Amino acid sequence: MSRGFLTRLASRDAITCTFVQVRGSGFKARGSATIANVHRNPSDDDIKRLLSAATTIAIVGASSNPGRPSNGIMRKLKSEGYRVIPVNPNEAEVLGERAYRTLADVTDPIDIVDVFRRPEFTPAIADDAVKVGAKTLWLQTGVSNEDAAARAAAGGLTVVMDACIGVMHSMLRVPRK
Image (cartoon, rainbow, N blue to C red; front, side, top):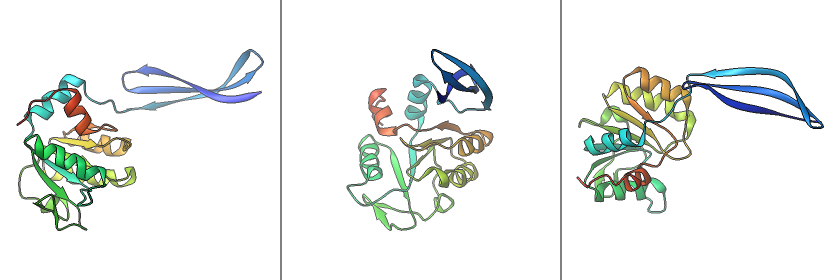
């Protein structure tokens, strides 16, 4: 006998999980739960449009260490012609750009807030992105948080989670600025 669960998409915005107990070749349902308001990333066409329209990207968690993923993505985005603003209280400068302690300290309008922080820090970053009037909250590969997505969406931002902005830029063949 083993236990597990089956998932099925109940609608565009909900997932239902059924908990089962398996015996031999059959199974017996033991209960279910529905998780509502599951975030779904925009379509590739929508992501291409938002990357094409954007000019300024703030990278929260930017690092001057060339071995860090945020440094490589910042380098790529700069080479594609974006104005990239590093946000990290532990950095003074990243790739020749002045680093800011917080999003609130940035004086330029921000199109995309690209986040290289652990998921538990993202709800507060989402709130800050809304406050500064950003258009998009982008959580990098491996980073997802439904609360952050809900807060950003409620504030009118487009939300992309668990996706690399550099990979998406290349894959979708977004033109250079």
